[in-house]
Picture 1 (cartoon, rainbow, N blue to C red):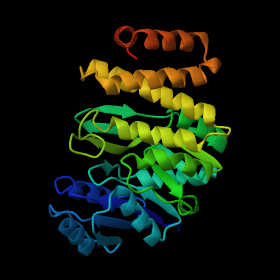
Picture 2 (picture 1 turned 30 degrees about the vertical axis):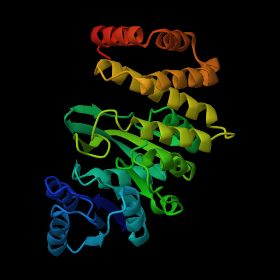
Picture 3 (picture 1 turned 120 degrees about the vertical axis):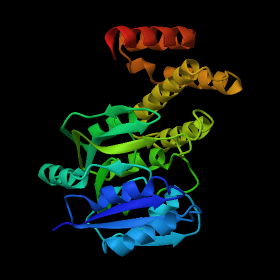
Picture 4 (picture 1 turned 90 degrees about the horizontal axis):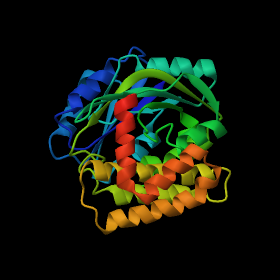
Length: 314
C-alpha cells in the first residue's frame, strides 16, 4: 500500500493548528505519515504539535529555529518516506477524502501530479475548480504559466521522486511561483479534478495576506525570476504572457481598492506595457483590444471589466 507523506510547516498558528491537524488525521486513506515542522513558533504551536504526536503515531514533529516556509518544507522533504507527497498549510484544512481521492485519480491516470479544486474562506469566500482532465507536461506547463493552474503547493499530490530532485528556494515570500514550473517539468502527466477538497484560509496576518499590496514587489520579483529562468525555452512566451496577466490583475486590484497610485503604480504600468509588447503578437483581436484599452486607460479598463462582470456574472 502506497504511503503518502503530508508536510505541514508550522509557525505561530495556535488558533488554527488543531483544526488543520485533525483534518489530516481524519483522512480516509490511512497509510500516511504527517510531518509537522515547528519553525521556531513562540505562541504555543510547537506544544500543540507535540500533543497530537502523542495521540497518533503517524505524526512526526520537528522543532527548529525559524528559517522560513521554504526551509521548513525542505527539512520535511528530506525526512519523508512516502511514495507520494502532499502539503497542507497550518492555518488551512482539508476534506477527509482529499489525499485518497487524489491518489486514486493519479494512479488511474498514470500521472505524476494530481490537482484538486479549493475553497477560500475567512476574509473571502469563493470556490475555484478545474475540469477533470489529463495533460502531458507541455500542455500542463502552458496552463501553469498562463495562470490557468495556480502555483500553489498545497492543492496537489506529487510523486515523491519529482519533488526530491528540487529544493524550495529560501528567502522568498512566493517560493511556490519559483519552483512549480520546475516541478511540472519533472512530470510526464498531470491530472486535474473538479472536486474542491482543500480549504484555504484568507487572513490578513498570513504570509500572502498580511497586507493587500505591500508584498507586491516580491510577487513581481518572483514572476521576473520565473520568466528569466525560462528565457530561451519553449515556454518563454507563456511565461511572459502569464506575468503580463498577473500585473494587469494587480493594477485592477489597486484601482478597485483605492490604493495609493505612486511610483510603484507607474512602474507597474510601464512594466505591463513592455510585457504586452513582448507577447501581444500572438493575441487574438479581442485580447489586443482589451490590452490596448488597459494600457491607454487602466481606470477605463477597470470600469469595463466591472460592468461586464456585473452584467454577465463572470
